[in-house]
Length: 522
Figure (tube, rainbow, N blue to C red):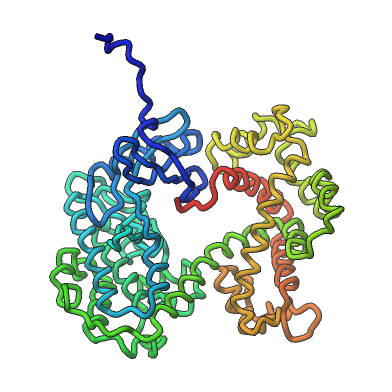
């Protein structure tokens, strides 16, 4: 008999065949994984140790472990450490995002929406009994199994609650789904801690969107987070913003929304209350399809994704206007002739930039190059990354991604090559947002459309003068190039030369993270 003490240790990850990429985050990847012993498919989330707090990863593991397995929760099946990552093996929700599926399935009914609420309530009733508050219920976190079951996902912001748990006082989640008591905690140290009832307010926001395809507290989709928070705290919302959206919705459904969006959490239904509510219970809601429901939700869904990307893109343009505007002018230009494409690709990144862009990037580069050596060494990267409030471990990531010649430092050309892809990505995101307002495809937007766009992007400089400032050729309309130029002028008005340089450093970190991940939602 072989000596068991001499048997080779099996790495836990070797129990799985790790396959296709399902999603990416700044410091995590999610891949399909098949358990070798029985062929069962899972999602394996690999969280990079170098860039993620061990305490955060362990907290999420404890939350998921406390919940165990549940039909309506994306549950943790296994967890272990590998050399450079923490691995969570999770149930695989092969049906994708709930909202995407609803958009593809034709007009849906109140009964369909009630089924969603019932399944989410089953998950919440279980969670809250187990002493867990999700704190980030939103469309992106409602997934479907292959059989059509709704599963609540992403417990990265979840917290233990109830007896023996620390009081919950920190505001987190997405603005339009945050409960008023959570917002008050963030602004008033004397406000009492909130409870798991905050999740029920989020259910009210989700149900509102399911039935009407717009947000209760941001009906036109143009408010900043601060304005949304104010409306939530003031209980400022109405079914009258778009009456046609509610024309075929029952009084019972509206009454439930009113109850869920109640400002006083003690008066709000609990998850258990929802499960016995006549509208939520089986056969309690009308089964007739709501006219155009899937089309309206599809438009809402598309806009939600575009604006999430556009807000990030606008910040890039505002903080580094010259380099970003140059990218915007070129990212949509005709592709270079085939015979010149190879030569262009071979040229150093900095040689492809006009002087005014190189000057801006040189300013940023010098903030890294503390000793003036013309190279950015690792200790210099660590110093500035720390001053920007990021984790020192990010410095190693930036150096690793940017140091193409592997000499242990970053020269100006390597720095430029690192940040330029982020400019291109931001140009594309802003273009998609711009095209939302260009309804006739003319390539221009008018005064009210521009005002709405800037307001939704959350800039404080969107006063009545903006259209005149944007319409530089005074033709009564604003082109994409004129819109992009606004960001450069806004930065100049804020005396933003140092800020632009700082922003390029931030973008370098973001670009490095982007190469390792992508969407921070994973």
